[in-house]
Amino acid sequence: MPARENTVSLAPELVPERVASVWWWIPSLYFGQGIPYVVVMTLSVILYKNLGLSNTEIALYTSWLYLPFVIKPLWAPFVDLFRTKRWWVVTLELFIGALFASVALALPLAGYFQITLLLFWLLAFSGATHDISSDGFYMLGLNAHEQVAYVGIRSTFFRLSMITGQGALVYLAGKLTERTGDVVLAWSVVFFVLGAMFGAMSLYHRIVLPRPAEDVAHGDAGHLLQSFVAVFAKFLQKKDVLLALAYFLFYRFGEAQLVKMAPPFLLDLRSKGGLELSTANVGVIYGTVGMIALTLGGLLSAYLVARDGLLRWRWPMALAINVPHLVYVYLALAMPTDVSFIGAAVAFEQFGYGFGFTAFVLVMIMTAAGEHKTAHYAICTGFMALGMMLPGMASGWLQSQLGYAHFFTWICVAAIPTFIVTALIKVDPQFGTQKK
Image 1 (cartoon, rainbow, N blue to C red):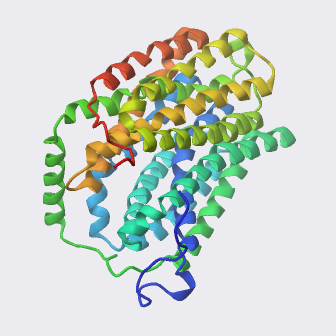
Image 2: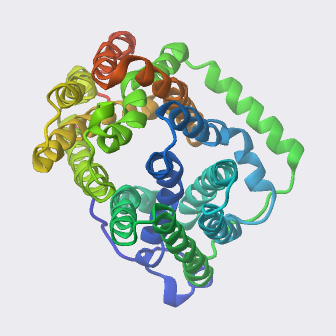
Image 3: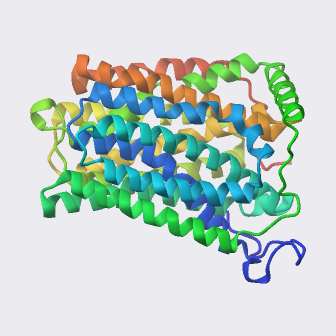
């Protein structure tokens, strides 16, 4: 949503005059939040595919990288214990930059896979901790009204980070590979660029981030641990919480498997059932056009829910997140060569995913509502990540056993759990609507 105002209403002594505008820090903060996530979840898949790893290995090992995002609510209290949120943001960005540069240095080595996988694990934990600290800083740096008013800014720049990671950086790797003939060199350059980007971002945020008076270390480990246990217990006592957890785990059951195998399918040789697109074309089709379509689908569904409520649109959304998977069945059977047609098919599937994902977010908000809603929402996001991690781990092995055409057919069958949890979840008729 558009910002209603351009400055943060904080006392002058808390925010230096030169950084009073939220435009100095919210866009960069949330752009920085998205990059580590897209690197470990998507860029790593394309990197390893370019380097010749099997789909089974790629899906299994990269799906494990979801784990830090699953369990991040468990160590969120410790971020409060040590230093300020501002310190965590700046320090983690510097550390993440060093990790990106380390990946670049490790790629030419003989044991690159084990080393880079370890570095991706560290990136995943650092990225998850950066999520905790940046979200916490956002709430401390803005008052309640401003948090709502500027949520559109943070969402937009998070999406832009997805386009940059899946689109521009993949395109850069592809073009460098075409020009040099050296895939390792191409990807090393990409990760050096990322390292420099985050080093500069850390320095920038050290200068421009405001210093809210509430941003202090709490220092009471016993109290925080007791509070966390109490908050988690209250979450488990919520009405119909088991239905909500089933929804988080199974709503994206098919999509969780597809997302790991879609880039390898686009890249794989035709002799192996893939479409044999160049890495640069995958960056444009999947990472740029696809992400734009996903964003447009999300915007449309958000508008419709605001107008009519979630109850009216939950079934169209459940269908939208699953029925477009049929385009991958067609692509695997027809094996088209027209890049524009393939791009349109991928965009259609991604639009459906964006349209259907809104229901998932709203159910998380609905479940977290009430006392401790911020902490409960973080718990919901942990189960959301678990719902992506577990199916994704097996997707590569399934694809290797079934072939692409039969695997994508299975993905369509995997819509059944989505429909079951959609039928079972209970939604207030007025939830999500702006009607009085």
